[in-house]
Length: 578
Image (spheres, rainbow, N blue to C red):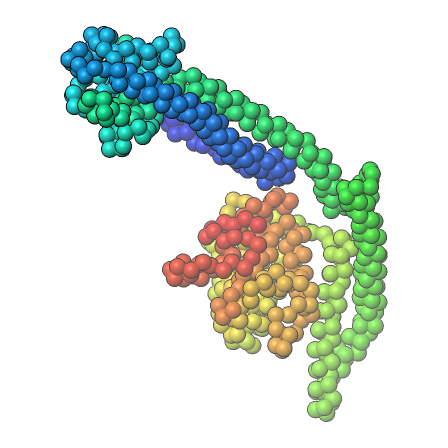
């Protein structure tokens, strides 16, 4: 019993293993087929060659068969006509005494050898020769069962339809049909040609019911046709293989330079700007290599210029941001003094002090964002990693956003798990990401509730911020993270901001090795999802939270429509890949 149980467990495993190996093999063949231009050309050449060779082979075989069988048919008709004349000559010599002919079926040629018909059959047998090139059967419609033959041919070899046609046609008019001939003592039939006609015996005193049939075996012709058919098949296969080899050689001469160009382009795309192709000759491939080298040189020059320009731009932003801090500090001190003493001023001066304070706060926020962006551009951003419960970070970000949410009549709906969701992260940067997401949801949520969900699994933690506002149009789920991008430029900002918040948030998420993704549909709101690995530096393969809100997924599924997932990730209900 234990042995039987082990067999029951291992048999499905063997089957599954075989299926996996088969799928891998099929996948490997598909990859080779998709990537190999040479294989495409050789296969196409072989398919076309097989079709052409098959068509030509069939045409040639039909032509050769028609030629061989036609020649045999003409010769047989000529011999049959001569035989009929010889038989009529012998019959004309008959003195009208028909009693000498035998009435015993199958024995007429032996018992009536002295009769004119017997002498005629003997003469026909002599004409046919020892090789028995053909057989002759004479029948009489008025004498059922009677026949005279030159060989041991079976009378059943005469086709019934052919005999009906012979009896229906006028005398001396041939009828032919290909038929299987049977001989006495031979079990296997022989493919042959049967030529039948009715003898014109008017004026001879004989019954006008004699029929003469020539049965010509086609064994030699069939052997010749079989040999020709085999030769055509061998020649066709050899021709197809030869054409495939020629196509492979010719394609190789073209594909090899193209493959080298592809490899050089890949190395060039990976940053090896000094990659060049060898130019040999002056043909199209050589000109392609020369054009590629010119393109690579121009591209390297442009990239170098753009790098210098980008470096100058980053340096300029960094220098200006640092240089503005000194005067801004002085202005801030003066503005704080004026703002603290605004109650002693007249209303106009007090209002001016408040406006200056607000604008200075906004200017400082913009300057801080510019400095942060310059750090990312310079590659100087670093993480301060520590184990943190993501729920605590979410609660701090929500607390910082409460005042702004109250001013916009917005309420937060927190959906936090009961167990700790520990992960290694820079809590300051993650908290900044969540604040930017919450501020953005308040800005575009139109006063409706904002749902903040937290999820975790063995490998990752995630936070999703869902609003029910204007949503995102198709294609905007990636543009929303661009610097200074706005979905609707005519829409006035109610919170302010620099337009760099989501761009910085994405940089912070990427610095952690995580994802920051967006989903949205016009009129149904949007959802932003932050996914981070539990262990710093570990690859992120999925997210514990779906990118598409579950209620939207269920509603679209119920309606029988496809859910519009406007994100690089594909929501699968629980986990989705990047």
